[in-house]
Image 1 (tube, one colour):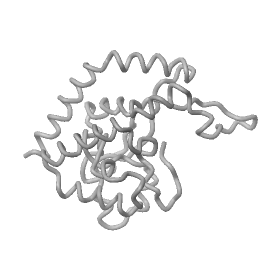
Image 2 (cartoon, helix red, strand yellow):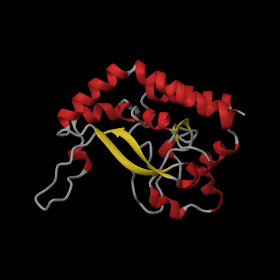
Image 3 (tube, helix red, strand yellow):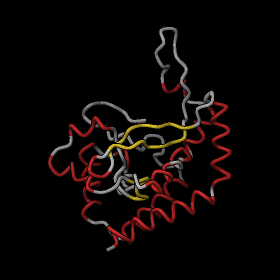
Image 4 (spheres, helix red, strand yellow):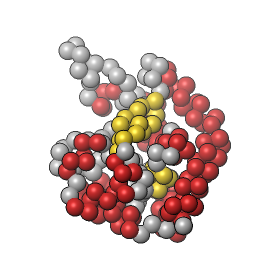
Length: 201
């Protein structure tokens, strides 16, 4: 009942209300990033969702697209703008993902959506992380994030899949607020240190 009906309804309703409430903040951030990133305030990237369906995740764009003399993008550290650094440090870059929740691509709580190329390296039950919608935050994100190994992070994802409940989701949401407030482990929220050595942005 909760997983199939109550949670999806709550996700959409809560996210829509939240987006309306913070719309002035979103507008200010969009304008600042529009200026800092030459008219490109948003970052879109393909990610696999429930049942491995590919969707476009939406984030605020914290790095510009400056290139070197050969036409290659400069290192991330050189492309991270001042306003982008602040937005990433405070996790404000994640806010547009509530649009993904309203669209039905994501949930507020669930395994974080990683890159499509990771689909090829999941083993056995690790694939079950895609039995549910990906989330803006999740059990892995409030349990060490990048201090854990690739295997441990996927174990935490699967634990969530098997133990979803209203109280578990509420526990994760409150833990997320706490981590955002103390700015713990913000910068690499999606780096699962996987065997491909590929680091999601």
